Amino acid sequence: MNLIQITRSIGEGQNLLFYDRDVQKVYLELNSKYNCIFFNEPVPLKVRVIECIETVVRKKEASLKKFTTAELIKILLAKLNSNKLIILFNGFHLLNRQAVSSLQELNNHTNIMFICSFNKEFKSEVYGFYKTFQLVNMEEYRLETGQDEINITYPVYFIFGVIAFLIFLKASSLANVSATILGALWFGLIIFRTMVYVGGRP
Image (tube, rainbow, N blue to C red; front, side, top):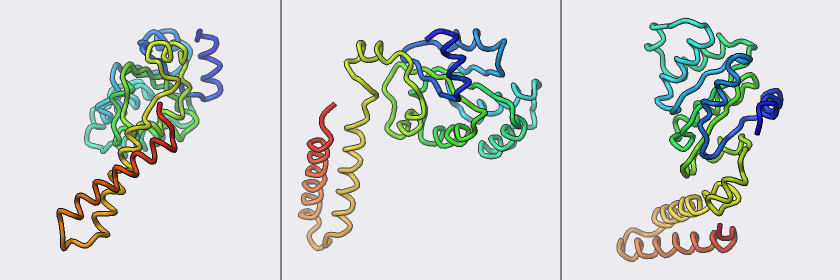
């Protein structure tokens, strides 16, 4: 994807995700035209949000450290107003559930967009955020990994199996604990195998 295509995606508010690329190069190309900030890693998130605020107001704000991440996000949105901010970072695969929750809040605002990269598989809780991105170099990802899309199938099936296990354990009589545990394990395995069969293998 060249600069013209990236600029078009920015105009459309489309988040972009690159496989095995350093998006700092994209940042250097965009920085003179847009309000941008680049991080080599997305965490720790609180520090990153502070840096975003300082980029928007164009000065250091030492007093920001006393606020929580949620409060900092509100400050960022207030300072940003209707201006656009492009957040670029490598290490998309380093995101965790807590970071994704905060980034999703930022992503809900049309004047904030993300350009990111990854080079490793990421956790299943990141998948919802990933779905808001366009994977730019899909062909390269497919050729290198043999996959057509990010695969979180087995982790999701495993979670369903664990949930089924816990439900079975809760509902069963505790009179015979060993039989209950064995039955729950069997039930969880059946759910996992059923999901694999219904959903198909990657």
